[in-house]
Every structure is written in C-alpha cells, then in structure tokens.
Length: 491
Image (cartoon, rainbow, N blue to C red; front, side, top):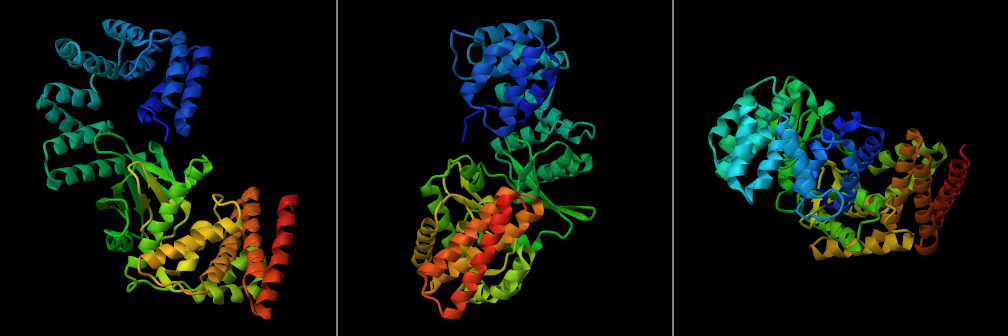
C-alpha cells in the first residue's frame, strides 16, 4: 500500500481550500483527487506542498500543518521552518483553526514543552477547540479534566465531532478500562450517527461486494465498519462465530437495533481486498496462493451440519436462461457434473471478499450463510473468472494446488475434481456474463464469455468425456462463440 500520512480529514480540509487562486486551486484539486483514489504517496504530497505556497498564509494553513507533522525535512522548497512561520503568524492574527494549535503544540513538545503547553492554553482560552485538540491536551499533559470535556462533547446532540468518541475510546483503552465502559460508548456513537443520518452523507462505501457497509472514522479506535439490514444478522453472526479459530474474520464489536433496522458494527481491518490488488497489478502469486490455502482450510474445517446444499441444477438453468435461452437444454450436463463433488461450506470466495491484511495473512470479509457448495465450485469461484491467471492452463494448475491444500487439511477430493472445476467455471461464466450484460458492462461481458470458452475448450480437448456429454459442450461452445462476436461488435 502507498504510505501516506493523510486521512478523511485531509480530504475535507483540502476541499475548503478551493476558494483560493486558480493556480493553487489546480494543485489542491490534483492532490485531493490523488487522496480520494488512495494513490497519494508521501513523495507526491511533499512535491505538491512545495507548490502550494502560492496560496498565501490563510490558504497555506492546512498544507503547513501537514508539512509540520512530517518526520523529514529538507532545505529546499516548502520547509518545516517556513510552515512554522506561516502557522505562528496565523495564530498571532487569531485566524488559526484548532488543528493549527494542535500541530504547533505537538511540534514544540519535543523541543520546548512549556511552549507546547502555552500553545494549548491559548487555544482553549480563545475557544479554538475540537476533540483532537482536547485529546492532544490530555496526551501531552495527562490532564484528566479533558475527559470530562470530551464526554460533554459526546453527550451534546448538536456536536458532530466524531473524534470525541474516538478520543475517549483511546483514553479508556490506555487506562485499560473494560468493555463495560467502551461498548456503551461505541453504541452511543453509532446511535448518534444513525440519528444524524451520517452513514450516507459523510462516510464512504466500503466495498463493491458489501455496498451497504459504511466506514466510521479513523482514530484511536481504528476504523469501524457498520452494516445495516432490515432482516437482521442473526444467521450471519452464527456463521462468524462458527468461523472463529478457523480463519480470520472481522471482529464483532456490537449489534444494535434502531427502529426497524439492525446495525452490525465490526472491525474494519487494514489491508487490501484482492480485487484492488489485481486492478493495481500489485497482487503477488504468494498472496493469491495464501488465499487458496486459507480457503481450503476454511472449507475443510467449518462444520457442515447446519447448512443447506446449493441446488446447482436450478441455479445453472437460471443463469443460462438469463444469458442465452439456447444454453438451457445443455446445462443439466454442467450441473450434474458439479453435483458429483464433495460439499463444503461456501465462503463466497470472490476476490472482493478476501482481504490481504497489512500484518500478513488473509481475512474473509463476508460471513453470511452461503450454504453448501462443492470444493470444485469454490475453486471456480475464486479462479474461474479472475484476470490474475491469464490462461486456462494457469487456472487449472492453481485449482490443482487448491485441491492439494484441501487434502493436506484432511479433506477428500474425488478424481473428477478437475472436470467439476471446469464445469463450474462455465456455469460461473454464464452467471457473470448475464449480470454484466444487464449492467451494460461490455468489456466485462466479453471477459466472462472468454473465460467460459477457455473452460469449454479445455474440457473438450483435455478431459475424457462420454460422446453425449462432449456434444453438449461443443454446442455450448458454439453459442459462446456467437455471443462473443455479438459482444465485440456491440450488438
């Protein structure tokens, strides 16, 4: 991941600077866009700060804060010395925001603690206060009166400074206070956010695969993920608890009900989902292989007793009808092949649901009840339609490694596994092609169809098949070829 000392507050502050001159605005906009894309590196920020001096003192306030809190410095461009001069001038003129006092106090704390204390006193005396500054005051001076002020902020219904909650949680954890203190505070924070309607207004969507999740802040508490539902999360929580000790899943924090909706608050782990890594061409084969190992471990060791098997016949017919009705008469062959496989609890293992953690390892993000799939279908889910392995030969090799991992974990794989994997890959290609067709995503439709064609060709050329079954696959291949020509010609 790109190293960057920035968070959502950075994006908001930069947005406020749009009122300044044209040249400065252009630079600020470019930096903001990089931040929103998550692509702003430390070096790029430093480079842009060198140019932002064109904005003048008031417009320089936030860039100066950012420059002052960076660990390194240089003698060229916009240095820390210049940033310090800008911030001190703003403070003297009474125009500085609370963040400026906070940045100055933290800067002076290392070299002149008394000056740091005076800076904090000036901020409080002039009413330049926010939760972050109160927390800094507690942190630098161990002033426990700041706790009361932070509590008052959390209880003030008009106050939407969410850092007040996070600062308190950070303090309570430092004081090693237990869940009987922190859990009610978390619940109070989430309930207040619900009342204020900030999930849609303020926080960013988590992942495409989990579009009803909102992230809640970043600070001492870390980032939380909040998932809302009218149906509730009883079954999802059961699955998550079954999964504990087998694979990494998001830590449950609290479940609460407001009106007719339930909110499930969980850990927002730091890492990158595999989809993002693939798009950025940053996914290593070791990481992908680790995901296959963890999937095998989860599939072998998760108890099956309370799960219902997938009906692949109904599923395959439905997806075929949505993609091209002519395929329906051939799908029983696919479904019957897939159904031969041994069953395991499905983890819905597409790459949006698998996160490579910063600390190492893989986390399964979705713990909803997906039922009993087959080992081969699980492999097709993660390998069959992912542009990480470019050829069907590479996908087959990866599927065989996954099968080996299943056996290593104590599971059983039948001899027909590869045949089942290829059939499941074709079924998944129909499903994805139909979905992307409805979305109007032409390139993705083409990629899905090509994945199906590759699997069908491998089936026909490499797998010994009864004549009737082989004829079904040949006819399906002809329809897939026709659909690909239509998709490429825009029809």
